[in-house]
Image (cartoon, rainbow, N blue to C red; front, side, top):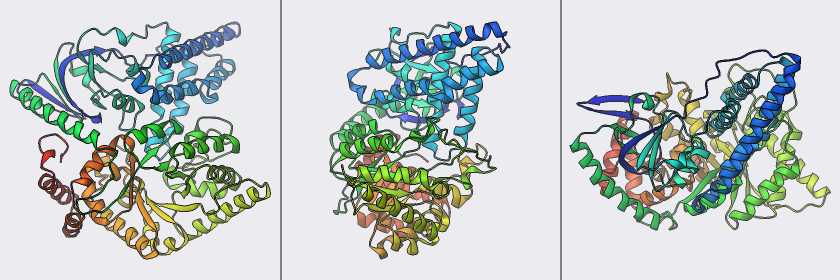
Length: 595
């Protein structure tokens, strides 16, 4: 977060998670973390009472969440899966059972037990390389926070009682909090905490509330009644703005509303350039309940279905039937369009379900994870593969292997897939015998070997998040170097170009499923590269489609040739911004183009 002061106004910079510009008064809500100042041992006689206290608090929390779910506004019922996931966390053995066991084994008070369980879960999630999955720790923290408040008897503070037209300012808001906001009065919110892929952000989008998160110090700098400008497109928040600033943002506000309306009206049109080049736009999802939302935003298929949550959430491995039922439903809902299911993309040490001894790794991102873990544990791998194969009888399903570094991994994975096929044949269970099998290109060695790999798979999907991280040797979550994580680095464009060329030579499709696919400024580059598909978070789809329909393939290819002549990420970013202003003038002044 950046803060700067100009005369009497102050600007903060956070992460924009729900678009729109709002101007209004600040309303501070105390959603700071419950401070557990007492950690103490209890006598054997008190242990059972502590267990009952915790069980009562968990039951109360469950009742509160069920009430919230049952009273969700009709327009966000499709997002009830977020509250369901919180209810699942309450039942999860890593949280509830582990906390109770700590009271019994260590004779400690309930609050301390919950805190210790939460810290253990945090450590597990920290090691998960997939940002979307890693950020699900926020949901666990939201649930723990509610339990701790109920343990302390602290009032949960009813947000539905807000009776003024305001912008809510909080340290953090849980998804459940956002569903309780009085939408006739609350026009948006900002928080100190949160992240780009948080469920709170998803709820804000569903409620059409502009929101900015990760401001860090907003609750320290803002007072009740302060006038705020919140730009949910750029992540900028202005405290007590000058009259000229307010006038400028009011003008931009009107322009944006008109622009958003035009985008919404065309979100279900195909993504086709001015000169007729068609590119498929698909959605990345984590839960089957997100499929309907992907459709609503104009997604043409599911380009990436992450499957890790089904493994992480429990201490018992998901059965073949449990996996199959989940995959089957996704396949049926999205049919006749395809769903690409990514096989397990984490390590055994992060899967709470795996009852096995695993050593701590110094660098888990480079360790035993994804396809490496699956090849080491073929029975776990085959269970998932059989489930995916069975689901392919109910819709168009594709299999995708992550973190491939070379050909041998592809051959070994295909050999295990063949075993799974034979086992289903023996059981006389139907599946699509022509199911497509692809790989993720996210390791530099796979880029170098792309021409060889392309001869052994049906499609490529480039995972730009990891590819950038591994190519530039950048830890995206290390605050000291995260700013160097740069999708516009010239090396990245060249690597993608090499992969696309290999796919073209082999006659297979190539897509991108990383964050670059949903970044408006990356679209000219990706179009110029000639990709077949882009897969992104559903909320990005309407705007990305709009941009594609405003650009010609001829211009994109010429621009890419010019970009290849540039030597730095700064030069490339500046070039694209200038070109976007020239190609799509209506973006100018609306906050969509930023440097």
